[in-house]
Image 1 (cartoon, rainbow, N blue to C red):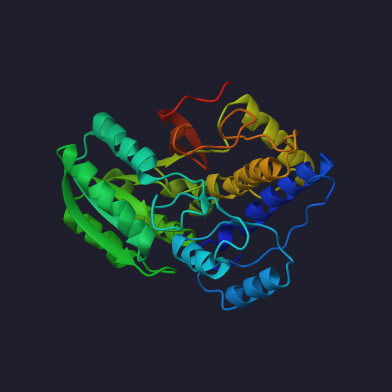
Image 2 (cartoon, one colour):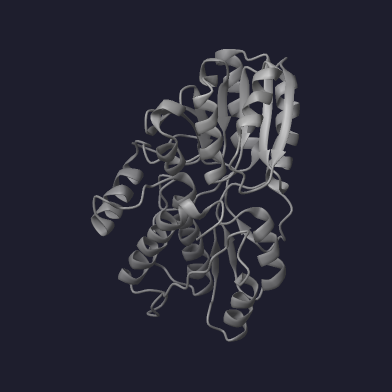
Length: 335
């Protein structure tokens, strides 16, 4: 609930509560009530390991649904050691986690590479600059990106990594300007991307270079301000603006539960709900239950989201929102 991803805390908690309520309304798990325990999975948390060990040791948790960066997830997985199920919900490298961890998020092959191809076909950028937070996921993502960019005939203008929690991006923006890049891949997490895009917009760089991200979301867009988002695209498996029956019903339930001032729905926080959908399928199978208390939103059906086959969308940031402009892979959910 703090650190670079702290901005997602309210909406992630709201999505978890919505899933819990729907599950309990359907008689819970074989008549047992589901209860939530919220832990701070920030990279800055100093209490997470001890809290987890106490909860698991005392048999006070039966499963974990995690939204964090992958370094934190690896640490959690090592501590948990398969003693309870662990559902990891955001996009990730596609590798590096134990086989028993249920990682359900998007991977670079289906999320990033088609987005780079789309940008190449639409705008034909010649020089890409790669900017990321300095930990495993951006480094791995950029490994894929470098090959994909070169395959389009473009060049790598520069590559840079900054510590998680970076706030001053003026020199980074000047480096991008000096590189003559006409496209920037942003792999900054959480609030860091907000500060970069504000600096980018203030320097009038939106007229010089397009921006692409696979980790930007609606909360960050709101915080940037519309004057700083021109020429920016995002690839993800979910946007709040997605027009489908499943998403329409989901948003109706969300706002009925939390009101007009509910935390802004976004791709990363909504993945927490999908994590509970996935968990309900696992629990139902283990308990031989016939009912499925939670319906998937991203898959547009009652089944859980499957990042290997379900749709990935490209969204264009327009003002204070993200509008879907292309389906990059999979079939669009029924509308």
